Image (cartoon, rainbow, N blue to C red; front, side, top):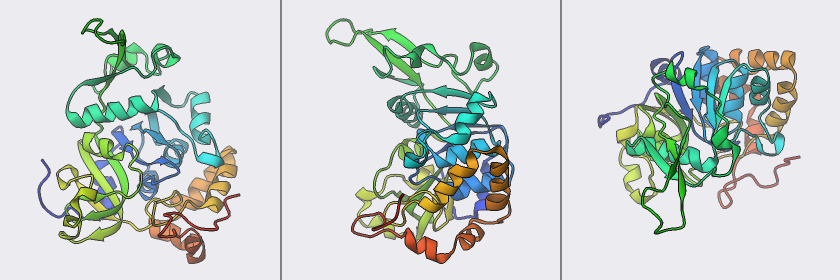
Length: 325
């Protein structure tokens, strides 16, 4: 159990302490919503390589980590950026060029895998993917699995229902647990101890957080120890899971953070153009990430006016009258 002490630290310190070459890493968020982008950019700046990445249905974070050459293996249900790109561009290119190994599961299976990890059990059963190629096609061959004791021996196992014919389910699919070395999530509110409150959809972030050996939390608001004791039923992650808390307003930018800001369509449209061209993308990594020492520097380069443009309406949780074309 993590200690009941303050866990606040800077982003560079948290990444350097917990995210290492070759580590098994999970990032939260969904497509272009609440990705821990400031942490993603810091991983790229620190040139951490050989990461085995787990994600549920991520988008911008996965694509930039893959595009920057940080990822060697990826386990995921879906990688896309909403209207900007139905399939992540650098992610797709890396697969086509055989630069990374990828294993795919259904959305529900990935959630169950993180849930199993959070429960401390080796697998969970489901009917998801019966009758599909998810069962037949493995991204990691058996020899690759056997050479890495952090991977399960099988992608999944189809099992006859051991409880007989008392129900209609004849077969189930057993999916293996995920216990990442590190999970990184971005939340709206956290306190000094690491208690978290996520507003809006939680996606698989809660399960990912609880499954990890170490949890890094970046947050929009850093609150005192008593604040989250009010309406405690709205809190999802208790301090016992947290290792580092980093106060990072706009820490999900350019993706959206419900109730705080929307995604930035200008940034994402420009990103897509550059991601389609190798030379332009190398320039993007240099100019948009490596040139900036901190996330604040990146935000300064974007400008206050753009940030005001995507500011969320408190009644809706997203930006009103935002030109998303």
